[in-house]
Length: 248
Image (cartoon, rainbow, N blue to C red):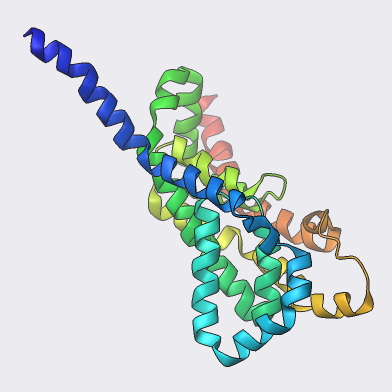
């Protein structure tokens, strides 16, 4: 009996290490990326200096370059590197708006799914259970309109991409819904940055500065996104409106 009690803490410790192992690996990979100077290679200056060699690489090995870019984007997204917009510029420059935007969307969705699964495996719904009835009520509302909420969350340009990848893992959302809303929800942003990347060579040649800050909040971009958010919110509004007479 005593031996069983003594063994329990050791078992719990091993279980905790096992659960958090994926997040520890991701954290170590992110630290290594910064330690090895990775951000220097994912920068506008690096793109400007190496654009000829990158262009030649794509022209000579289009399929390989495309697969490699998707894999790199997925990897950097999975380790939560906060420079997705810069890598999206690379995608647009290398492959153009249509192909580049598609590659960015696929890579980002794959990487987001990896970090989501890692966070869910490590944390699960432990935080919501400890948070009390308010958080459980919020989770119930989320489940009732899961696709709408997740889609709106993806469309809001104010939230950092890597934060939105992790937050849904704190709740018991369906993996299928997470993947679908991620894929379709990030399409507008991916293609906006890809279009900037597709024309960035001319900006470099003109000697002008590339301005990315505030790009997603420009009216011509923000208004269509608000329209999509409104459409996504209609099921939520309808359910509340439909349920209000009964509640009264």
